[in-house]
Length: 106
Image (cartoon, rainbow, N blue to C red; front, side, top):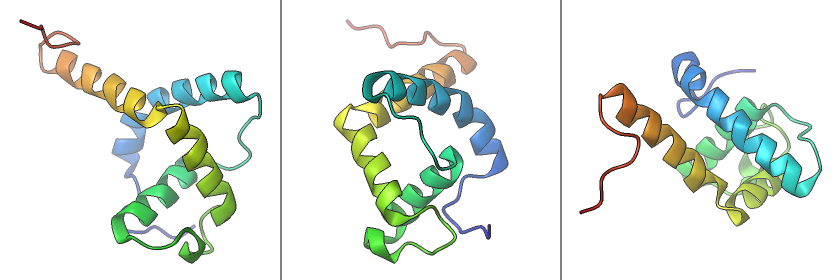
């Protein structure tokens, strides 16, 4: 598959993959249907849509089908999973920076 500017780099995917798969496991438990398309390609497709502001139907054919990408986006969004994924990654970054996983509330 060709690469596009908003695609995740291998280094970004290495950081994101474990957390994304953990969130996917939560989604499969909640919804019961396993994902058919490649997770990284699906996330790259969502990045493409959000970066360029295109319609879902205008996704290049190299990505999974636009119906599948949009359905995945809706399933994740309705359950607040993007925010939970961002929170997990933020916690990891805070720990790597030598701080606590969560900020102290004062």
